[in-house]
Amino acid sequence: MNKEALDRAFAPRSVAIAGDTPPGLAQLVLRTLLDSGFHGLIHLVGRQPMEASGRKSYAAVADIPGPVDYVICCTPAAALLPLLNDCADARVGAVAILTTGFSKGSPVPEADMDREILALARSSGLVVIGPGCLGLYCPRSGLSFDSRLPTERGRMGFVCQGREASVQILRAAGHRGVRFSKAVSCGDACDINEIDLLEYFTVDQETDCVALCIDRPRAGRRVVRALKTLSEAKPVIVLKTMPIHIRGGSRLDPIDGPDPGQVWTSLLDQTGAVGVSSAEAMVDAMLTFSMLPVPRGRKVGIFGAAGGASVLATDVWASAGFVLPTVPPELRSAFDAAAMNQAGMILHNPLDFSMAGYTGFFFDVVKKMIAHDGFIDLGVIHNPSGHGAWLPWAAFNALIDSIADSVIGVHKDASKPVALVMQYIASRRNWQKVYDGLQVPCSRAGVPVYYSMTSAARAIDRMLRYYAGKASEGRDPLLRYPGYA
Image 1 (cartoon, rainbow, N blue to C red):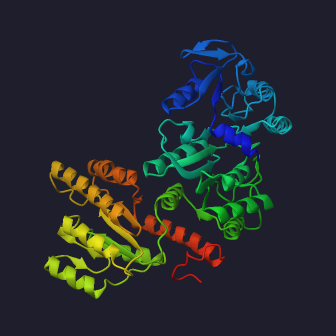
Image 2: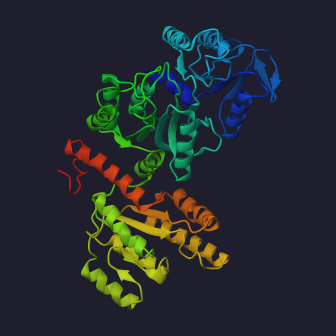
């Protein structure tokens, strides 16, 4: 793992885009860098010198004056090896090969092409990402492969082999408020692979948590060692996207054994990595580890006006290992008097405020419940998106805006973690307003927002299990939770 070259590529002073411009993929890459606010110089490299987008296009990377830190390769497969040799001669830091389909139009068979790329990288010290990748994303330097990704920096690292999965997960997590330090779409990874990147993120001081989305993980002791070392330093969330029974015909060595599923589970158990089984669960876990302060225990309070939906949530949280404690008598007496026994109101846990839900009284009770010493460790505000859907549109809009302001206020004032759960789509129109008016402002304010009680409970359970594992090994004696030895 060449950390110096990767550091240089994540924060490049100059980038070269190699391909036929304009139009085509190279032009799209150029527009993406410009729209993302890239901070450095951008050079174009084509088979014929030309002007494009007001920028000079060079015949070769070596013709560019000054050092080039990162090259994005959009050339046809047949032109790839000459370009890589050109990059090596110019002492480029790293190259991302977006090119795919080596079997078409290339004089070199696909397997041989991989071997030649790897041999060139090893002999020259050139770092090669891909082929079949999207490359690097680093908000700090304005480097991106999708202009719709967040431009604000954060502390989440991300590694993914698949191109489509990279974009979908990064976008989904970004919409929920997750912000990234660095991300890599590594494609077929014939040189720099997921293990190299795990080792890189282990020592990266800008990253507090890493999410790994992998098609076919490499077997052997190195992957176990890399995952275990990273998990000891910071949380690592792992999604294996290729079905475990699919093997063969791949440039990668899939994890194998008499029962691949059991081997995969054993890998997670040995390393302490947090395993998830879907892209949705991956985003929920990323959201939880990056935005939710670690609860000090498993006592949860649920506050809402969802009627039976809030009551059903009791089973969901209990099945995930949480406890819904009884409201302390002193709190119950005070709230009973204030509520004046309004019809439908349940001042137990979960607390259901019926028609008084999401009012000033509701949020005042929520704040006091969360603040009460020893009652709960985590507060969950439950807001079904159909609540108030019968109201005139202007009144519904005002209600959602008011709820957002109040949830953000509770989040800012609370001394314990607070999460928001939204669910039950009443209509496209109502859901869009709930998304724009409630989820987006809350996510921007740092409130973790989940789309179901089940996804929230499972994600937070994964977080607590990770930190309980650390505590049981004696690495962090402050993080001990009820129900764990």
